Image 1 (cartoon, rainbow, N blue to C red):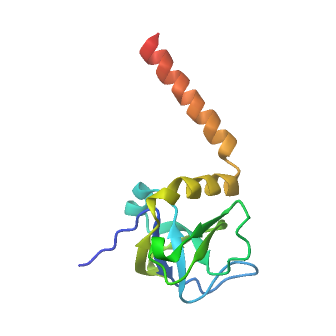
Image 2 (cartoon, rainbow, N blue to C red):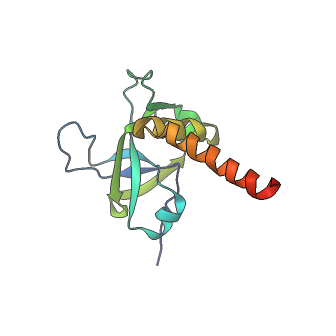
Image 3 (tube, helix red, strand yellow):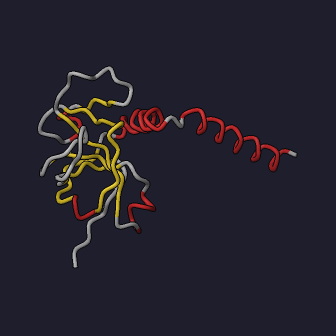
Length: 138
């Protein structure tokens, strides 16, 4: 039996038919997996962000530009990280590539902006650092 591995930062082709309103859809569309690898391994679903080849909105802080050649794509694209969606793995039918590692921090930052969690994450990280310092250096 062949099983697929679904990893954060992988680009897949997906069937996103059955959309409502302004949702991005289509029967064959590139998407980026943004959910964590533990969940990706054990859950029947993954969280994705939709890619588009329309490059007219590159200045939006939740959009990350993907150079086609650097990221194994047919054409330059934008990851629309405000268009997050949790889908069944059966919607993903072909792994295309993986984003260049140099973009991972930028993608994570755009996700934080999209979900408005940047301040909370920073606060959490400071809190964890303080706890570690108190435990190790007290």
